[in-house]
Length: 377
Image (cartoon, rainbow, N blue to C red; front, side, top):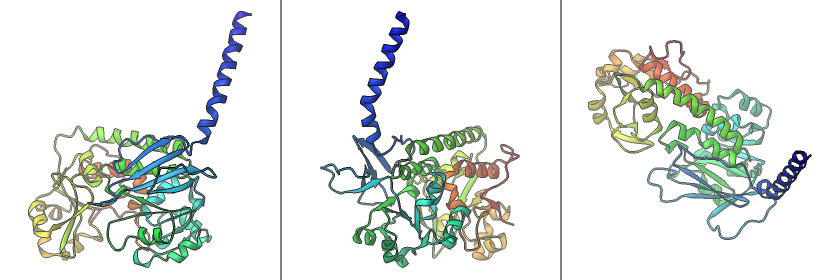
């Protein structure tokens, strides 16, 4: 009898406890997320609201972007001047980069997508189907962005990126009184840091718990592959990208591209440049350092070795070209040039890593078939 009475007391105490904390837990905008790899956005919690800061949105940027997310219909707390206030969950959004479509699709938010920058270049079948059904409108991009069309869609927020140049869309969108989420995933130094931006998107839709689950699963797969490649005794040298308009834009040594190569057991020739993002290099400098590199990845618009040789006569001297070890990330491209590497690839860094391991060390993953990459013939 005493045992039964004590058990009833415990149940009553627990019920009272949960009744007390329920109002506080239910009023928060979303479940908490935990940032482990991203350096370019930070999240904090203040009672009912979520605070987000996006930093390093482009190289040498002199500004950050701040967001205050509050539950829909609640009052805006005082003391947050300079923050864009967004009611969550967001009901309607416009997106201006294909990179973010994987986040939207993975979180089950395609029905919230009302406008996109260039629907012809979308690779996702799900999003293309929604566009054909008239559920997503083409709003243009860069200098051709049609702000009037964006206004007609009445979005709660527009997600875009910025480079600090005249083509950036966010200044005129903000001037039009719209809420703009500026993303900086392309400036991340780790592939998992890029993928972790799914949590940034999730916070605007009360999908924090779902984002944590998805990210934890892909993190586990990625780290398992990186551990496999860490054991290699020889790391082949690697160059990336191609010359363009008098420069050779290379990924910095702190970029996610460099990290992919490192985690795949490669030796990236620009690993010593402690910068992220893309850096314009003198072609002669790349020629001198990359001449003897064993592999050449991410060859832009090139689709064949003949095309590579004809781009510039002296490129034929590269050891990687002579050996036919050129690999491009354009295995999955649609008729309009939309490349799935830059779309679903942001949420499949484990598959990209497996591709690069298969290229550099075929014996480590003998049964893996290239998914995003293909060898130029």
